[in-house]
Amino acid sequence: MNTTSYVLGVAAAILILVVVIELLRKRRLRERHAVWWLAAGLLALLVSIFPVSLEWAAGVVGIQVPTNLVFFVGIAILVLVCLQHSAELTRAEEKVRSLAESLALVELRLRQVETQLSRETTPPDPDADA
Image (tube, rainbow, N blue to C red; front, side, top):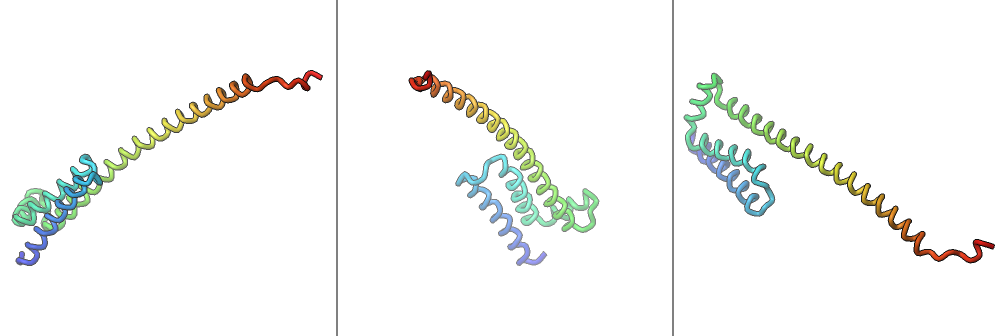
């Protein structure tokens, strides 16, 4: 590995960590979402500082080309992020449905009360008996 790719790898990993931490600090990213991105950033930093660790890990897993391990781990992290977002979306959809049902019931009850009040407060029409 040449010096340029070494420095570029370390800089990219540090940039990922800085961006994620800054998004957390500004409350634009929640902690439960940041876990996977922090893990990916720390893993990228570890591999960029110690490139031999990637070759060792690829050998342990039985992958001949270490870059393929990087792609596999990257795709696995993205799949986990997608699963997490899908689960949260499902929960949010359920809450929205439940709230919409509750709101519809409240609106129905409000209309019933308004109708009842309008009947009670409307004076009888004297010409209606004639």
